[in-house]
Amino acid sequence: MSRKHNKLNAMEPMALTVTKLGHDGRGIAHREDGKLIFVDGALPGEQVVVKLTNLHKKYDEGRVIEVITASSDRVDAPCAHFGVCGGCSLQHMSREAQLTLKQSVLAEHLQHFGGIVPQEWLPPLVSDNISYRRKARMGVRYVIKKEKLLVGFRERQASFLAELDSCVVMDPRLGLSITAFRELISGLEARDHIPQIEVAAGDELDGLAPVALVFRHMNELSKSDRQALIDFCAERGWQCYLQPGNYDTVHKVWPEDGPDRLAYELPFQTPNGTDLRLAFHPNDFTQVNAEINQRMLPLALDLLDIQPEDRVLDLFCGLGNFTLPLATKAREVVGVEGSQAMVLRGQENATANGLNNVSFYMHDLTKEIASQPWATLGFERVLIDPPRSGALEVLPHIVSLKPKRIVYVSCNPATLARDAGELAKAGYVLLKAGIMDMFTHTTHVESIAVFEKRR
Image 1: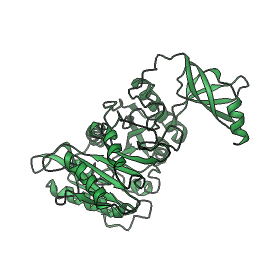
Image 2: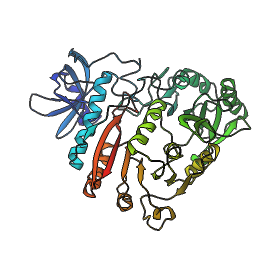
Image 3: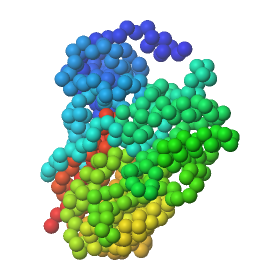
Image 4: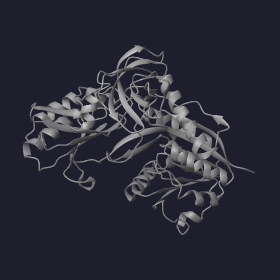
């Protein structure tokens, strides 16, 4: 055992007063000697007893082991596994306090990195605080010494899998099946050679399975194990996939016929006279919170202020989650994405929905784009939904197009703020911004902002 661990174990728990929250949702307090401590599970204004977990030169880390005086924002966690499972970190905090934290994170980043304050703050987009998550990657581990199989997520601040029976934030079709997953894999010959299950759920739609399971396996499965996985899914009307290697090896084994697709519907009228329906492969990127997605899309289109004669550019478009709703409102839409598979999926969905005013192109948007065929078209509106790294490389070209409005959907407030600063330098005003609570009970901040060109 290291000297640091010996020192930690020898230190007695200490009573502290928490003064504020950090961006990561941990409470901030100070020891008697003034040293900063980040306290997991603490809220501002609380008096708590803290056990130190890590020592650093300029700060320490700890966790609450007793609450002496509780904050009015403290609530009972909806999940019995909270505090052990690392999937959620804010279940002890009221919904209102969670939203306030995320709003403050966005505001502070915009001010710090971009020197910008929006002219108007949008009200937060919210959904149910449980049963919202439709996609997840769950770890699987057979513990030989305990003769026990674990299925779920890693423990809080640890590399071990938490022992879970259910998950309240997941779609109930998935979250209430964890015990069944565990029993299924425990009965396999290959129970110690299946490291993960990828789960995905779509809408309950006629003709398509609502759920897909992707089983990662390190060794070739026996005939009986393969059949057990198939039977499990077949009994539930779910799709079953196997993954013996990387993502390219994922293949459907049940049902034997039919498309390897799930699907979800959106409240936009198509030329076919039906609601927009987007089909996706279980490994495709989709928004995990269906309710927030349903509310985010009309908001984005409203912020763009699309006119029937507009041509709209959708960058980092994925399988067309924004592109196809845009195509129901605008004269023409162009979607650009770095993955050929996603481009093909977007085209497939456009055709299936009878939309002939939309085109998809593949291009790495971190690279030069001026020579691309779509880059010379004029665009009145631009929507961008980049990865966590942001859209810095493509911003100069967006600016050169001189769109009237830009809507930026972000999963990282720091890169949104940085890019907002660049747009401000180019003559764009941040009209509105706000948070979208895509991942309730976590510190993840999803946000949306609209910029308008100064006249």
